[in-house]
Image 1 (cartoon, rainbow, N blue to C red):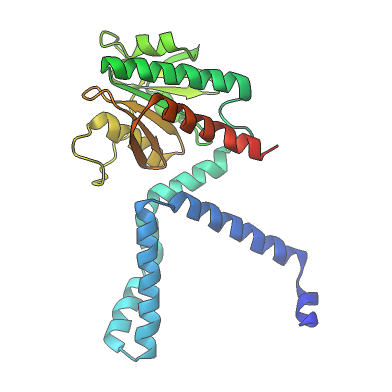
Image 2: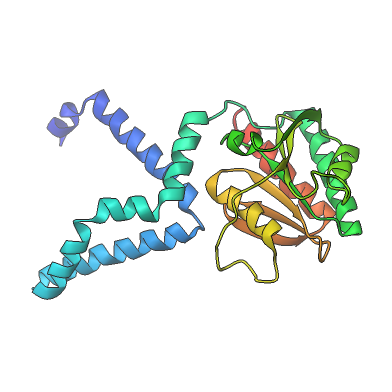
Length: 256
């Protein structure tokens, strides 16, 4: 045992730690998504493969082995959004969270106030907050603003007479960077059919990136929050405030 330990190099330990971190980050991104179920299915398939070989089920083993030979291509196709998300996070990771302490809390309060006002008037809205993954591709097709986050500005952007009210606004570093932005629409069947394209667009951008999206329904006036491909509906003002505060302060606190 001691001989084996002596043969371990520091490079081996670093290699194992690096692979573990990458695998852990990948599992975090897959958690709660459709891809997680697919990954579980692949694990079951591997177990069936071992079982068919052990019990000498040759036909079953041949079928599974034929599929596994194309596994790399299958994984790329099945996990394309997640792989893109991981690579984007690795290439564009920021050292600090989107919101800084005092200014960030002020921005959150302005967003919550605006969402509450819009909901009470049944005015639809899409508010996207950038985190680690850049939203530049969506910003570029919108109308550049680079303005301070304020309740009044958000209300004016989403006013039905505004030419920008149909698109989304994107926030970065406590600034409204762009308005009138168009987002990818998810085709996820688990989303209720009673929800329209605004909700599907809000969820769609969180599937492709790690953004946080606040959605106000034009039909019902309800407030929803989209994170990591999931949609949390019927939020009240205090619930929205608590969720945003936790999302944008927890990571920062952990870095201290």
